[in-house]
Image 1 (spheres, rainbow, N blue to C red):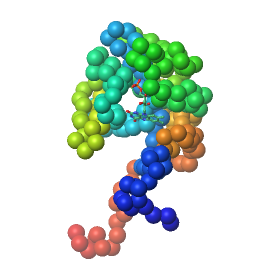
Image 2: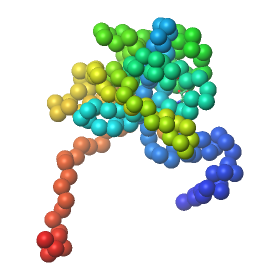
Image 3: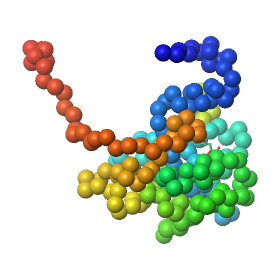
Image 4: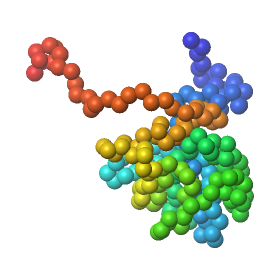
Length: 213
Ligand SMILES: Cc1cc2nc3c(=O)[nH]c(=O)nc-3n(C[C@H](O)[C@H](O)[C@H](O)COP(=O)(O)O)c2cc1C
């Protein structure tokens, strides 16, 4: 196999390094974060770092790049405490990707793409219309990493909307049926294929364990 060490990383061409390291962690989720500033300007941005932090309470985190330059999503979340997370499906890949362009805070990515804002009761932040999973989040905490200045934004799920067909009897949201995409690196969108579901696993009883107990 081809191998790389820290010296190689240091000498690498910048874009090569970005692509390499961004692919190395595995497939990432593709989400659009919807926000609105206090002055009423909506914003939507693609984020691939949303992670599950716990089911009870229902917590999700995402990593914001350092705020050394203006980050509209971060600013709006800090201003209002509310944001939405919307899953990217195969029909909106190009528009979702375009939201990564650096627009001024006064320019809404909704007006620069075919993505449509959707408003639901008790949520001032916009959802992305047609997303098979839409989540209303309440900001709870931010954790700044001293190492590189990135900020983990932690929030609680306040409302969860799931397209009927993809919600299974036991609570699983079948993202594959929702044609929800995943991200490989920073620019390669991929559509997962369903393999199987497996039951809860318990340790195998081996002779060694029986002897020791
Ligand atoms: C595939 C992809 C994934 C991204 N993931 C993140 C991320 O997890 N965190 C982040 O801060 N920016 C991420 N970005 C960059 C933001 O989309 C970009 O900085 C955007 O301009 C932020 O918009 P805003 O200033 O309106 O918040 C990603 C960009 C792409 C193309």
